[in-house]
Length: 444
Image 1 (cartoon, one colour):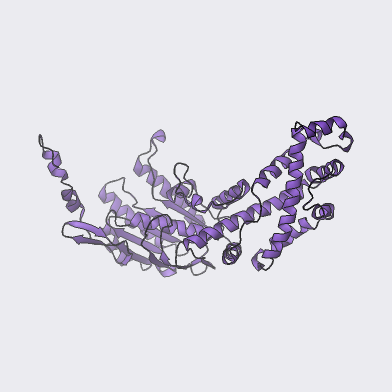
Image 2 (cartoon, one colour; image 1 turned 90 degrees about the vertical axis):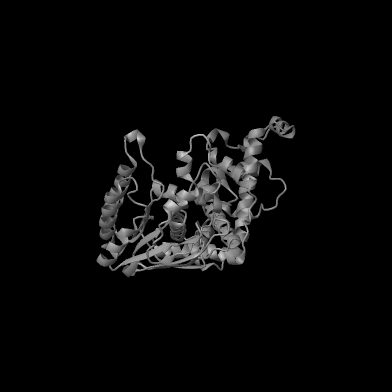
């Protein structure tokens, strides 16, 4: 069963971003093959919700990272192999009886293009098998990869393909043998070669991710059973920021609702995105941007950070928020072990309704102790009410430090509820009112 996630969450966390190069997917996409890039994308689309699978993938990537393993194949060979295998037309079979003087002449003057492409594919497959056989000796000690190694060996040791190792390094394969090999590789044993390619593309991903984790100094999270709803992240930071400020964060059944406050620009949204990305990568079994991490495996995650109105449907921003909340509420009512991250709920309505709704929704969330909720808000008054009514809410904030009339921000998560009220001070610092009232002399 995969980890439940939707497009809104993928967009909020910038997992895939077609319009810029700073997507999380792009950070890890250092694969050497197109097939590897496709496997990586599929992993991002379907994170894991099984502890054993997460742990096994992490151990494989960690092994490759510690051994500093490099991708052992020539990347141009895969284009030749893909072209070769995708040509399934029986009429293109290399036939031994066609080894005529005319064909030899065409080959000599370089006009027998189809034969050359097929021949190139055969040679590439031979190189692939021999390269994989050698590489398998290098990674044989990786116990987390033993099932895959067993599957790969079943392909490499298939009797129909035993001749491949005898042809390794052959300068020129005779036409008659080429015809025989073409029948075996492209038609009889196509599925075996496809299976080997699948494993190689996965290896491409593991090696690429291992190198990214090594170069970035990421760590591997420890996946725990779901029972205690535990989350502990030490030194967490956003992977795409320059000189980020790290934070430590902890959740359990007795503090599974995080009530986050702080001024604008204090770091709330960045923190929520950072937490979402870190949890997302942990459920992929990938290295995470933190000093250390332990987490109870969850079944899904839904965020509302950059929610837009829907003009085509006639939805206001507030109604879009309500519909989003309805979708999440329905999912939470049917499932346990879900992570919910909401940034500034109900900003599309009046202050009184936003206050009442924030209290009501947070109290309802607090009854679901097997889920994790992170809610940020500017309505700090709601926090005082929630303190009295709920014993499993963890109140944290990002402080503002005033240097005279100029605010600065620590970006360090702090226990409690903010009492910062510097909105009018910032407006006055920018001389907004003076600009509005000025008629002829603009304020500079």
